[in-house]
Image 1 (cartoon, chains in turn purple, orange):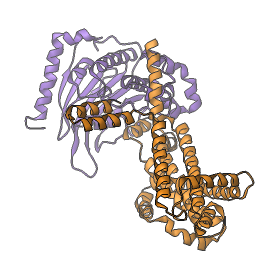
Image 2: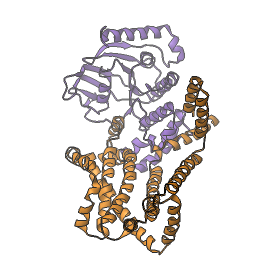
Image 3: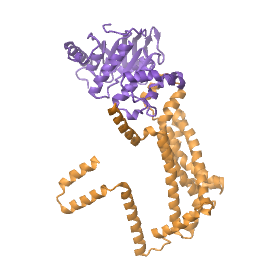
Image 4: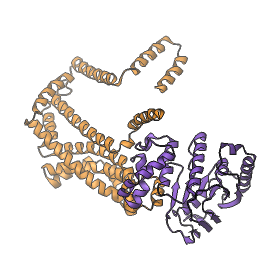
Length: 267
Length: 301
């Protein structure tokens, strides 16, 4: 790792072993022979056109979908359901509108250990809330939050169980460009400070390059990894990194990989 | 507001005719009226037109009573509605029929709605039956209920329950489908137990749909109770309307109907009020007013 990491040990080692998936009742190959060994504490991105299976792969990592062939391994053990120590986030914040922000953030604790345990984690929740700049909105309802604030709350909910692995399905895809850039910076600092492994599904090439140690370019029909691009820009990266000559070079390489994998006549 | 602005902007450009322009400015003046005044204007105009038609045409009051005659009857009816008076007792009977019927509809509707919404069998086998029943005019079953359950209060509240159970069933079963895929994924990723998914997610998501059903149901229960009273039994407010109509006292009929519609509005508003308290998060007005509050708060920070 070239990034300065915290001293927290992250021992969760994810391995995607020869995974293929066909949705029941169809013969569409959503994924074909995907193998990735994810280094603990590394940041990887899955990028590709619609139908390349990147979200299917993320669902498999989250234990929400059992691949028809191959397996997902955590520290050598096969995943057969949502694993411990994994946080998940979607394009929509998916906050429950009848709960206040802090009640939403404490939901994973409440589901796991009950309402009493959730109340006892209030201080932790408030601490996380302040790191993403949401202090003062603990008791606001999701309907009162802007899109960016709602995604910040979703980040807090993901972090409250202190997961080693963060699975992000286009988390900032619905936000405006400026908010998105700011959220990317925050995501990077969260990943670094917690030494978390991050798997990011995204449509944005600059976002993938900016955040990742490794970008997996995928192509559709059948869904597969077409190219692996290692991004060795120094960390922590900031807005200046966007002007780094290598940044443009990496963006170009990912774009070329996607175009080749995509085929000229494809949509 | 912006909409009207745009429309007038567009039309004022195209109209060079002075008559059209005058009409436009009159319509703009009406559009600008506060809602209370606008509603009162329409009601007063209708009543005044009605009064004039009755007086000028000489239609007998047994066919169409004038609003002033109905108003006079209303005073009598109000006096008879005083606590302990006979009309108050009849109204109380009808209210009991409505509330018992509505209560039965809530319980049965919840159970059947859960069955349809939560099981494949219910969805496949029971739902089509209820859709078919929903399309039949349920009021036609009124004589059946009298025949089965007699002339007492039972047949009345059972018909009220029968009339109002369908919207509850449909509200519950449709509401249980309102949960999004991401919400289910979120709960599953937290390894939520089926009961938690049901109680902390699906039922909450169903609430706005359930209340939409309950608001239709409470009015349907009123219709069912009064209809059953019409058909037979000699009790309740419906019977009073039937008696007045039999002796062609249409002014009294109108006055009694007015009381019934007040009851309907009251019952409906009560359910709507509870809905606003329970599903406050689903109320767009409350949300935006809070949003404004939040905005000033965040500026202050």
